[in-house]
Length: 107
Image (cartoon, rainbow, N blue to C red):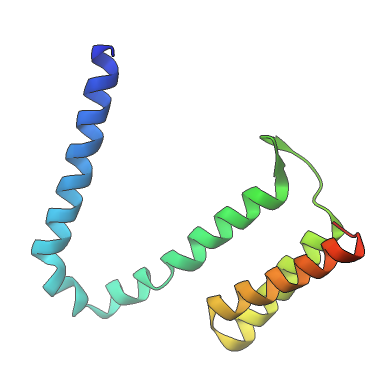
């Protein structure tokens, strides 16, 4: 292994460790903060949206038009999340619609 690779891994490990230590030390004060709780509640939907968007729009790293079934599945998942305010139910609904689209041949 080259020195650059070792230094990169060491820095990544150090940053990860420091973030974990900081959350352990400051966690008690942060959990009491209403703003922190509001912001952290948005992390899961943002990560899921980024994963879904890259999976729908990129094929082998190249931007393409998504299949109709995938667009409908994302729209249904979005509507379900807006109505129920539950990301898990929206994910299940989107996967069900996508599975149905694959079965019918729209994706």
